[in-house]
Amino acid sequence: MFSKEEAKKLRQDFWISFGKSFPRKWILYNTGIKDFSFKFHFDLSTAMVSMDIENQNLEKRMELWEKLISLQSLFKEEYLPNALFQDTVFLDNGKEISRVSVSLNNVSIHNKNTWQETMVFLKENMTKFEDFFNEYEDIIRP
Image (cartoon, rainbow, N blue to C red):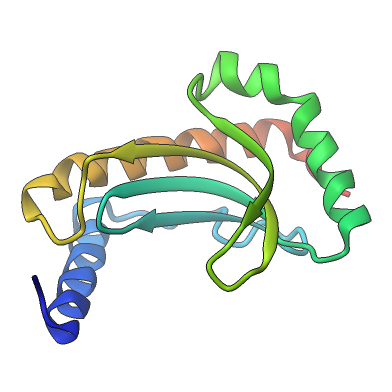
């Protein structure tokens, strides 16, 4: 196992390496829609790219969620067939969100041998999320 400092350094090294290997401005880091964002995640067993709706006003969150659900078949057919649509996800901090995500299993931020595969996964899938959002933004935007 790694010490906290070693684990922190590995995480920093991964994200720096990712940025250098795939230099690109992710235009949808900030969607301009309140509490709607795109995220990257990579931990000890999984990598994930997601669209998260974090609005704590349930009515507003469900309104945005219903728009995504109306596009679900298009999203899966044209962009990411393995996408998981979850209307309720509880984060580690107890916060309740809605999420559309794709995951890559059996990878670890602590295993440099899985980094390249993970970087390609993150890049390709974020691009698909961005393409989808750019195409259907007028429907998604409140």
